[in-house]
Length: 411
Image (tube, rainbow, N blue to C red; front, side, top):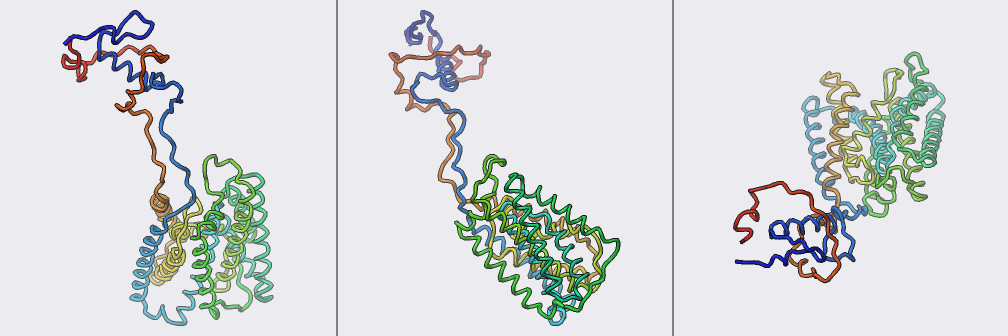
């Protein structure tokens, strides 16, 4: 079979391509490099078309599935605790469990709210300890005189930190860490333990306290499941350049999240101090930060913000409360820092699950523009159109290509 050597000659070039395989390689190289003769009026896209940006729609099924796992885990721990001492789930021992659960729950609510708003509050633990000292030193003046100043100071601190974040547009964790260091300094001004003054006992209102936490957890999570509300709270969620300002729409969520999370932490500290039979000792309080954020993550709240479940926070708090009582009765003596670390790691794994399976399938698909041209594109080539030819680099000799053999080119 013979061929015409001029068929592979470039326009205006007297030198012709005499090897069909080399010609095909040259055309493919020109198409890939953007020098294709297909249609020079169209821009040559490079790489892949980016997928459509996340529009805030989430899949709640993954949260509900995970919450069933948490409920089962809480049931297993409760069963082990009941086997250890069946009286623990009866009054008056049950009142103590409910009080601890309410305090831990308030800490977790504050942590989860700040996470959803994209400004994780690392100061909640030190605020808990500061509120404990406040109540221990002023509890004999009455519950209101001990509680109200702690709530006001916590709210003012959260407001100041929120304004700092919005004005400087710095990460929430960085600003709240600076606030946490300041509160720790206040906590460590005490050189010794402080005995709790007064006789206020939160166990008298155990069911009211825990019921209030459970109601806030479910109602708050239910509101967060509504699309517009979830997107409103998650305006600080990282998207594109993290240093870009989020606009006026992010002001209210940031301020509300930091103020309420600080107030919840102060309330939890007062409850813990009123329930404590031992003096309040100086420390950092960061163990409560780890527990609060870890439980919020474990309950399904995303570390990146916005995403969260409905019953996850409640079930995670119940499971930890039962475990704390169980390890005390077994005299395991596990450090709160160790517990916080384990919960946090589990929470990070939960975040990966939530982020991987919690988003809806994207309608836009990614198209690879670097793929070889399809056969349909060849019909738009015309030898009369202007062409741009690029000099092909020297091709190494290869004997394993199907088009280099005698069957690829007939002489």
